[in-house]
Length: 196
Image 1: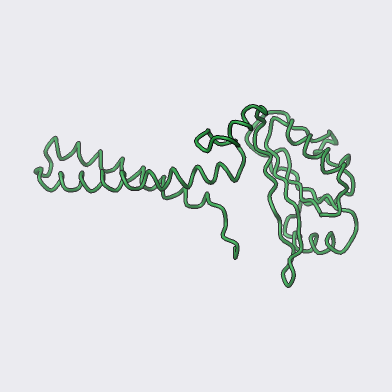
Image 2: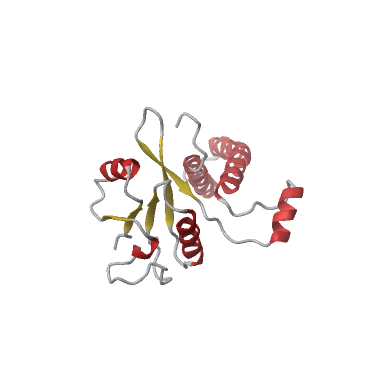
């Protein structure tokens, strides 16, 4: 079952442009008030803890009142399911764009103080810090991984094909290549460049 899609926007120019840009989403519902965010049964969207689908996708126009935004973020943060919240913005000379608002996970104030004063402290689980940690890990894994793969390939050249050692080295090489592919897949988890 697909999550519900909401455009939370008071009537205005951006809401009209956003509706047009998002017209390919047949389930999109435009609402002007947070209380209108309900599932198909009419129940409030606070998540039920089941499954992996997000409780809702909510697209916000910048004109949404601050109180509504704060209430939405509070409901989303308390939900056992993940919500996807996007702030719509108009770029000069471009169409409407959507900026994801990452809620991250709650942390203690003491942990925040530690992270602010010690750059070696574990990252706060917030999108930008997690992306930085993923980029560092990807970079740090690539060098030893490349060296290990090269050494296994060299060892395989010195071992007769079909031997027990050759088969064992082939398994090791396949696993290293699998790790290489997984690490390479992390390239998608990076902060976009300004021109993107």
